[in-house]
Length: 170
Image (cartoon, rainbow, N blue to C red; front, side):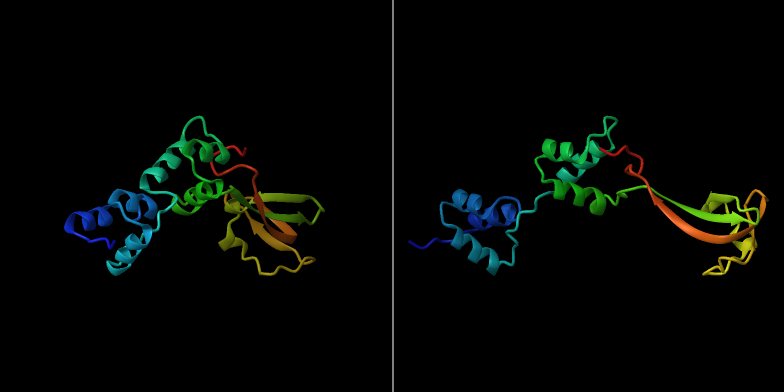
């Protein structure tokens, strides 16, 4: 027996498309999933049900930023989402950084003393370091506080910490 669409059944389809599964919509309308899929196609409605919605994103954000700071696996189990979905929400949707990084400039003085200084502390404009620097030649390296070094073997390093930005690793 053919299913006859009316305004009420079309309203049910439009309201629930993308929220409920095709099977659930078909059960509400007392028909089969093929009928629902065909009409959704004709109306250009997506029946795809996302693993998360704005409510779930907000739930993950609140848990992630809470004082107890549960791990990602714990957040996944509390929300009923998969671990990969929680990671996607945090690092893509919420644009959180996975790890904290710190940039350093390492160098050796003319007295063979090795230093590692945070890059923000180096006065780049006054130092005028060539890229790449000659490892044997001495360069004038100025820090923002006015400290001066004759430096060679100058390298740029990036350290990736074992903690999430602003959170302890689990």
